[in-house]
Amino acid sequence: MEIRITRVKIYPFDSGEPTAQVKAYAEITLEDCLTIRGFKVVQDKKGGVFVGFPSQKGKDGNYRDLVIPLTLEIRNKIRDEILDTFSKYY
Image 1 (cartoon, rainbow, N blue to C red):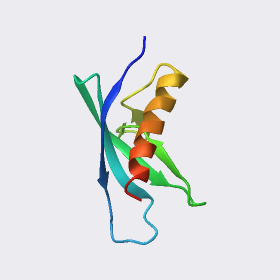
Image 2 (cartoon, helix red, strand yellow):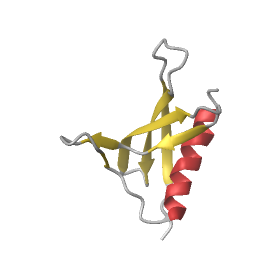
Image 3 (cartoon, helix red, strand yellow):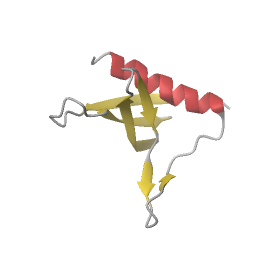
Image 4 (tube, rainbow, N blue to C red):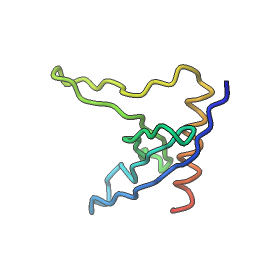
């Protein structure tokens, strides 16, 4: 089963701090019927970027994933679509 990502929106984020790691927030729409918000485009210490999936901090201080792709293929597809769209801004 192929899931289509029909829309990606990037929300550039500037905290005003030059060392800030979060560069943007993102949302994706699947099959024109489900939107998932809360993705983060994060810059690592070497200058590369990666996609952080939506998560929430629990009472114990640990973060729990809110969106869990069940296959590596869909995880990579979501990541690649977000990074491709992000690269158009930067």
